[in-house]
Length: 296
Image 1 (cartoon, one colour):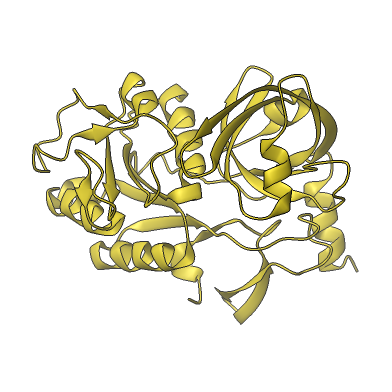
Image 2: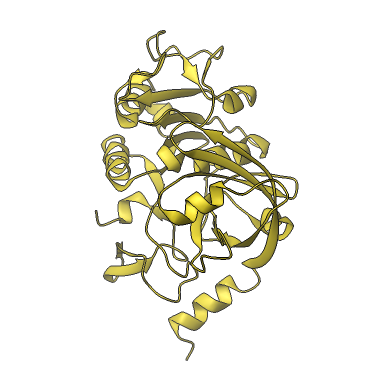
């Protein structure tokens, strides 16, 4: 009989690669935030929205760090991170031309349904990158996809916000700040914060999302699916919002990781299954889970 561990090994075989990636660029933003572009052809070719990579930050530090993929362009991946501890500090000191070892892509991706093309993307802090990735993915897919993004941060955003020219009649005109990249892709986006940034919504992302959802008709709500990534309290609030409106919702969970390939079981969360509650590994069983299955 094949064990669960063997089934997992077979499922992930030939899907995770190890390669030395070349740092192409690194851009610094306020709040010790950085966007790094790495040439990693194997990872870039296989990556899907919701996947992450496990990076060696420096030769002096053997433990890798898990970071969400924000974008794939050609044979490169983009990652966004904030300095938390020595590992990411060392990574921030890299320069173009330096090499970093990349293990990835890892994890179960988001799975958009063609029956629910009106996608609501909610990202908070370092949970913003997967929302950018899935927005890029959807705009390139055939079909009647209509993403709406709501991004939140208490630090200055890791981009220079722009006043949006895309119509959003559901929110007050003073809430007009957007992410330039999404604006250029034609994807409506609004920003939320409790830090008083200009032209941003003063409140939580879920409060702003509630405004958007309440503006939709019953027929429109039937076509909505929510995707979200961010800190656990935010995801719990997103799950409650989705339940309020009866919406399908997938969340990408943040957890501390050691191996990131399912071996150590150090990143488990409790999930509801048909056989009862079970512990699932965020790295390979997730990081994306149905919000309704989470035991918060």
